[in-house]
Image 1 (cartoon, rainbow, N blue to C red):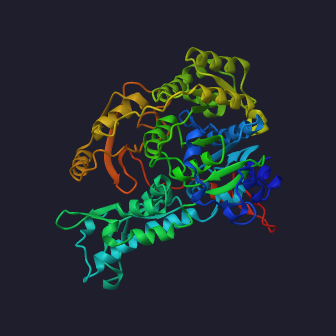
Image 2: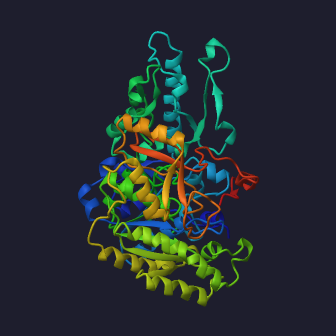
Amino acid sequence: MTDIEIAQKVTAKHIREIAEKLEITEDNLEYYGREKAKLPLELIDDKKVEENNLVLVTAITPTPAGEGKTTTSIGLSDGLNYIGKKSVVVLREPSLGPVFGMKGGAAGGGWSQVIPMVDINLHFTGDFHAIGMANNLLAALIDNNIQSKSRNLNIDPRTVIWKRCVDMNDRALRNIVAALGGKGGGIPRETGFNITAASEIMAILCLCKDIENLQEMCGNIYIGDTFTNEPVYARDLNASGAIAVLLKDAIKPNLVQTLEGNPAIIHGGPFANIAQGTNSIIATKMGMSLSDYVVTEAGFAADLGAEKFLNIKCRKAGLSPKAVVVVATIRALKYHGGKALDTLTEEDVDALEKGIPNLERHIESIKSFGLPVVVSVNAFVSDTDAEKQLIYDHCEKMGVPVALSYGWADGGKGCSDLAEKVVAAAESCTGKFKPTYDLEDSPQTKMEKVARGIYGANDVVLTAKAKGQLRKFERLGYSKLPICMAKTQKSLSDNDKLIGRPENFNITIREFEIATGAGFIIPIAGNMLRMPGLPVVPSAEKIEMDSDGTISGLF
C-alpha cells in the first residue's frame, strides 16, 4: 500500500482520547473536527521542561534515494511508547509548495505516520494561511505608507526588502513590479514573493515565547530605509498589533496522533536551507511539559537543520537535547559513494565504503556540540548483511551506537531497539550542548566557525556586495545576532554537485539578508532561492480525488 492508503486504512481515535494520554482536560482543547485540536500556551510548565528528555533527529546529506527522517522521528516516538516511556513527537507543518511540487507530503511514511495525513499535508488548522496574511498585511501597509501624503514616513521604495508571500512553489512571482495602473494603484516598485515557509513571520512564530513577545518581535522587523538613510521598522508603521491579532490562533500548537494512537504535536514550518528549519519553541516546550520524552526533528541534514536547531533555537529557548539521532540509509550512502540512482538496490560494499565519510562528517559535527549520538539506519529489504556490518564496524570505530530502524514496516515495534539505545544515550548525557560560536564573535568569525567546524570547509569568502551589506548591518548594531546560513541541502559545501564528504572547498557568501524581528543574520551561499519553482513533472499532476472524496497521489 502507498502511504496515503495506509493512513486511510487506520481509524483515528477521537483527539479527546489522545489528550487524555497527556492528562489534558477537554476544557483545554480547541477542536478542529474530531482528529485535531489546538492547545493553550498555559499548558507549558517550565519545571517539567527542565526534567524532560529532548531527542533531536537529524540526518546525513539528503539524496534522491531518501533518508526517512520524519518516518524515523515518528517511529522512534512510537518505539519509546512501545517500551513503556511517555513520549510525544513534535514536528513541523508541511508547506503546500513541496506537497504539490517535488517532495510530496511530509507526515512520515509506511506505518510511522501522523494522521489525519491529508489534513496535515493540506490546509490543516490554517496556520500557514494566517502567517501568509500577516506577512502580506505588512507589505500592504508599507505600500500604503509610500502612497500616503499626510502620514508618509519618507520610505525610499528602492530600499524596501519586505516581500509578499504565498505557500506555493511559483517561480514567476520571484521578481515582480507592483502598483501598476496609474495613480490609484500606488507607487510602482520592484518587489517579489517568498514562499510562506521562508517568511520572517514564520521564523518569528517559531521563535517567540508568547503573544506579547510575538508582537514585540514583529515590531522589530526591518523593512527598508528612508530617503535620508534611516532604518524603518514594522513598529514605525504601527503594524505589530494587527499582525499579532492575525496570529492569535496560529500561535497555538496543534495536537494530532500517530497511526498507533500516540500523541503528536505539529506547529510551524520554516525550511532549513533558507530559514531555521524546525518547529516552534512553543510546540517543543508544550511537548516537554506533557511527557517524559520529546522526539523532534530538524530539516535536512545535520549541517543545516541540527546546526540551526542548536545554535539558534536552543540558544534562544534555553533548551538542550539529551541525545541526537543521525538517520542514514545504506542506499543513500551508496549514492554518496558514487553509485547510480537506478542501481542502489544492488549490493555494493565498495560504494558504501566511499559514501560512509558523509555519515562520519555529520557524526563529528554533532559531537562538536558535546552531545551523545545514535545512528539510525532506516532499513530496506535490499540491504545486505555485508553492507549492514560495514556500517556497524564504522560506527563502532567512532564509538557511536547504531540501530536498524524498521518503523516504515513495523511502526513502534520496529523502532524498539533504536528507542532502547536512545534512552541509554539520554541517560548518559550529563551537560548542556556547547554552541559552535559565541554571540560576541563577529559575523565573519561565526560563519567561519560554522563552515569549518560543521561543513568541513577551508574558508568563507564574501562577494563585494555581501561585504557592503554586512558593513551596513554591523553599523545598525546587529553584529551580535546569531547567523542562519542559507545553503544548498544537497551538499556539505555550497555546490550541490559535490556529494559525499567534499574537501578543500570554500563557502562563498553571495549576499546577506537580515531578520531583525526573528533575530538573526542570513548569509546566502550560492544561488539559494526563497521562492522555489515547480519541477518539470510536479507532484500536483498525480493527485486526484474520486466521487467519494477519497484522495490518491498525496504521498
